Every structure is written in structure tokens, then in C-alpha cells.
Length: 182
Image (cartoon, rainbow, N blue to C red; front, side, top):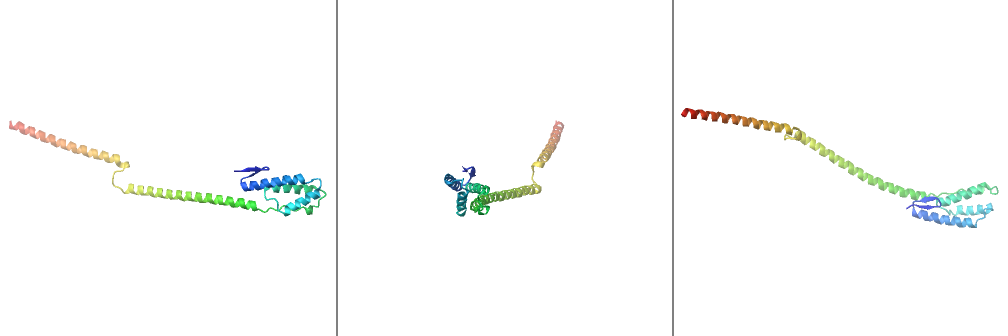
């Protein structure tokens, strides 16, 4: 859960706690420091820089404000104002955590991609198998089913008509015999 500390939104709880401690230290230093004496401000600034007192954006912002104050002060020699060292410890930690999250997402997506490709390959094989079976089968299929049924019923009708004609011929022959025998 993201936490807001002195205008900075921290996603890491440990980093937010560290920033909160730095903000409390800044308030303490501000309550004791006399900004009317730039030499005292320079002395405190140099001690903070040398001890690497701050490790979050909250502390770095405070150091930058002190640095700007000292640079604008005519009483301070600009050579005495130390640069603010950035350790990169926090950024490396965040980058490593993000890299782990990204790696986990990539692995998850790779598994999904593999399953998807394998599934598509199996479906392709099934479609090809069905096409081969349909092309090589001699049995009735949906495509020519109607024609085969029509042919079958036409054949049955012709057989029935032939039998009916044979029966009519026999019946006629029997009728003639009976009429001759009388």
C-alpha cells in the first residue's frame, strides 16, 4: 500500500518508514538551526553529507534546499559546499524488486503462450485429420447425403414399380386363364 510522506508517495513500506524518520530528523534540525548564521548552516550541511544521513527523496530534497540556500549566501565560499552523494541503494532495491516482478510476469506469460501454441497445434492436427478422413471416406457424408438418399429412394421406387408391373402381368395372365377355363 502506497504511503505519502512529505509530498512523496512511497510504494515500499520500509522506505516510507525511513522517509518518515528522515522527516522527523529534518524537523528537529530545523528547530535548532539558526538560518541567520550561514556558517552554522554550512557546518550542519557538511556533517549531514559526510555521515550520509539521508537515503530517501525526502532527505535529498532537504539537502538540496540547504545547498541552494548556501549557494545564494554571499558569506559562504562555493568551494566549501559539498555535492550531494546519491548512493543508489534505494533505486537498486526498487529495480531488483521490479525485475523480479517482471521476470515472474514473463514466466507466467511464457507458460500461457506455450499452452496456447500447443493447444492451437493440437486443434490444427485435429482439423487436418478430419479433412483427410472426409476426403478419403467412401461413406455417406453431410455434403452428398441428400443425393444418396434420393438415389436410394429412386431405386426403391423403380423396384416397386417393376414388381407392381410383374404382379399386374401375372394377375392379367391369371384372369385370362380363368376366363379361358370357363
